[in-house]
Length: 48
Image (cartoon, rainbow, N blue to C red; front, side):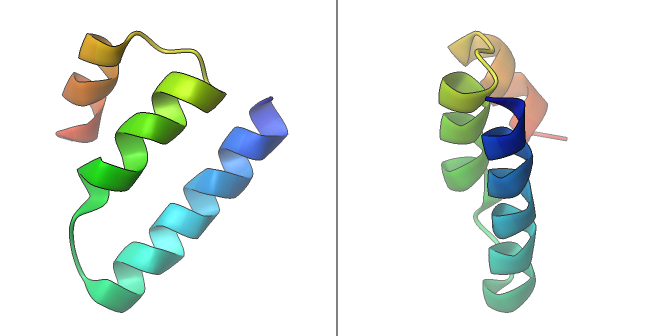
């Protein structure tokens, strides 16, 4: 699952570089479903 998570992270970074914002809407599901992070904690991580 880590490989899928890191691949999704790279995709999120590229997408943010192209469109310029809105990372939380992409980051939170990746953290919750691919890295098995708690939803509240994933929301806090996405604020960084």
